[in-house]
Image (cartoon, rainbow, N blue to C red; front, side, top):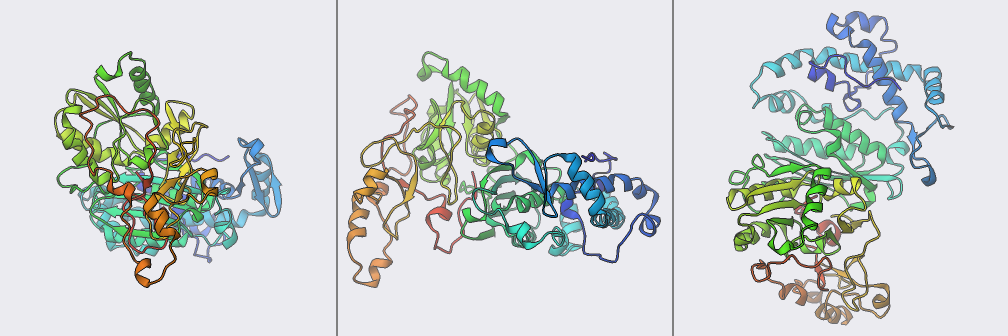
Length: 528
C-alpha cells in the first residue's frame, strides 16, 4: 500500500490538505496532471507530486474495502467492478490498470489544492493564534468549500451499510476555543447531511461534542474532514474517535446546535474551564490503579475513591468494581453532589471515569477547584476506550449509550436485575405509557404478564382508556422519580455501594434521543 506519511513534516497546512476530505474533484477539465498542471505549480509543490499520487491511489483503494465474514474478522477484502479481491496485490493491480483516470484526477485535485492554499498557509503561520481559524475559514470560505467531494461514489455506496450490522457510530469531542460556533454549526449541519449522517452535535465557544451514525464510508469521510480542518487538526487525532457498530438507524434525526457548554454541567465555562482538568490516565494506567485499589484489604479506609461521573441509570447496568456511583439523574447535578459530599473527597486520590471522557474534563476541573483532594485523575477516552483494551477487565456489565441501541456489550456480565421480579436483566425498554420519559428493566417473563411500565402509577395510567385530550398531554410525575432525592448524600455510608444496585425503575433524562423520539427540543448531551 502506498505510504501515507507526509514528505514535509514542517509544512502542516499543506500536509493536512492531502487528506481525502479536502479533495476537490469537481474540476472535470483536469485529465492528466502529469504535464500541463505540473508545469503550473511552484517548486515547493512539485516536490509533493509523488506523495500526492501515492496518497490518491491509497485512498481510492481504501474506499473499496468491504467487511470480511464474521469468522474472518481480521481479514481485509476489497470489491471493485463486481470483483472481490482478497489480497492487496490484486486490488492494486486492478486499480492501476482500470482506474488510472480516477487516480490521476484525485492527484490533480490534491496538487491544485496545495497551490491555491500556499498563500493561506503563510498567513496562518504569521497571524495571531487567536484569529486564524475564524479569519481563514469563516470569512474566506463558504461552508460548501469544506465539504468532501463524493462525486466518485454512488449514492448506494455512501448510504449502504447504514444498518446496525454494517454501519458505524462515531463518538468524539474536542475542547478548544472557537470564535465562531455558529459558523461551525452551519458547517457541521451541511457536512452531516452531505454524508447522510444522523446524530447529535453540540457546539460552543469551548469546543465540539458529537455522536453521529451512518455507513462506514460516510463515517470514515467525516473523520478525515475533522482531522483535516485547520480548526481541529492540532487538537484531534484518529484515536479520539470512538467507534461502535450501529449506523444512521441509531438516531431518529440529525440535531446540530450551539450551546454554552458542549456537555451540560450547569456551570459557565468561564467559571470552570476545561483547561484545568485532572491528570489523564491511559486505559492501561487506569487499569493498574483500579487493580491496586481493589487489592487493598479495607477499601473503606483507602485514600482512593473510584468515582463514576455518569447518571444512575447508566451505572446501574454496568460499572467498575468497587466504584462510588452517585444516584444522580443528570450531569448538571454533579457539582451539587460534590458540594454536598465534599468531606467524602477530602485528602483522597480520586479516579474519575465516564463514557467517553468528556464529563470528566470539566467534572475533574470542578473537583480540583474545591481544593480538598490529594490528586484527581481521569480515564482518558472513558469506558469506551478502556473496554476496547480490557473487555474482560474491571468494568462489569454493559456500557450505556445515548441512542436507540441503549447499550453496548463487551462482556457477558449482568450486574442489574428486573425491576419487578429481581431476575438478572440489563436490557432497557421505554415505559409502556406513551407520555412517560422513563427507562425500565423488565424481563421477558414479567413483560409477558403485562408488567411493562416503570412503576404502578404508570402501569395504571397505561391501562386506562384515553377519554379526553388532556390525558394525552399530562406531564409525567412517576413514583420512581418522586421518591428519589435530587442530590443524594453519601456521608452516612462511607463504603462504596455494591456492584449491583437496588432494583428501581429508571429515568432517562440525559438521553432524550432514546426516550423522546417524537419530541422537538434539542438533546442535552450527545455523549459523555
